[in-house]
Length: 463
Ligand SMILES: C=C(O[C@H]1C=CC=C(C(=O)O)[C@@H]1O)C(=O)O
Image (cartoon, rainbow, N blue to C red; front, side):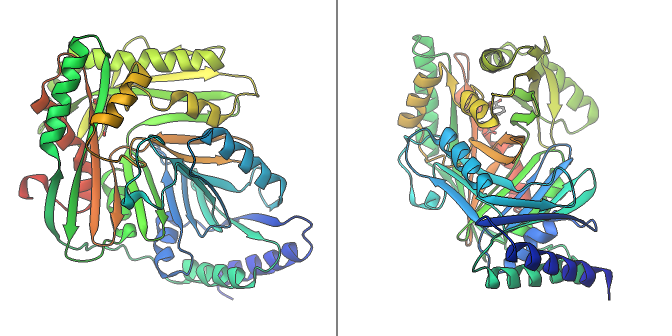
């Protein structure tokens, strides 16, 4: 028997055995498998009867996940305490689940995200993206430091068709070779949405800041692209993996809509008692040559407007971390974080807490930092709600995962877009302060649109 079929066969036998003897409503089994690119499992989702998929890769590619199917969903549409509700329901699910595994620390994983602002009126395109939506995937492939593991989570009863589909997918995963998808449909329309209103709102914010109404507001804008064919999320994801390997790569697909992106920004990561976060605000483009790039970086490190924007983020994250951690370490000066298309001011933060502090409680404290909302937080949010000419949906909000031990990581879902049929909606924002200049802010948002445009095969100067 070929090695691949052997794995498929063993997994099927294991699942049959543990579901038959299960005493709980759900079972989750994990086992080490031969290494395979998680993006391949994501791609296989296109041929599957499971309609949900997700993908996650952290900036160092140390933790990569791909999930297909949805065995359990936690969906919160109200504007209530969405962070604590997700946490409670995740604990309920874990209490209803028997965990079996070859690896001591193998557990099911919960993946999902939040909308930016539950008080903003939702538009149709975000229908399938609730204010908080998390799923436990049916088939999860994890790659951690090059060790591949499959986790299958299913109901213990009435699971026959699910088990058959899992079996079919595992068969394909290990018998068919992976051919990257190279071609994407051609972009036929590039439309900037309500740009005049956006520029007007930037001016209004600058005036508001000069009059002392707030200190900083992050304002985003939207572009809509139409293609001459259907966009395949796996093809866009493959391009992101190739072009932005050192970003957080994420994709969350629900009923034919896929929210996808390549973000440089960590919101928070929890590893046992240690919390990690980053302050990211202040931007400049990459240079065309290494010496131009170096001097642009130096300009950014000394630019008072960008340093001012950055300080609001540092102060807010410092305070939020000090509220829950004992020993908070923050570098005294920002460094540069260079991504493919843009460079940012970046300050890492680390803190240690006691075991009562949960990951989602820290996500709640941090979201939105002044890198995405503004300062003071509530006033900035009101201004965004009122003046920003778009529905952010999941853009600029926390997206990520957590496991049964309560460890996990959330990124800020920027440099992102929503793929729907033959359309893509992309979003980009910038921090507006008192000495901002509307046209340079507009140009900065163009640079921030680049990662998604390149992944879609669209060159900004040719559009
Ligand atoms: C709001 C975005 O970026 C934020 C993150 C890093 C730098 C930013 C800035 O320099 O304005 C923004 O605060 C975006 O990419 O849409």
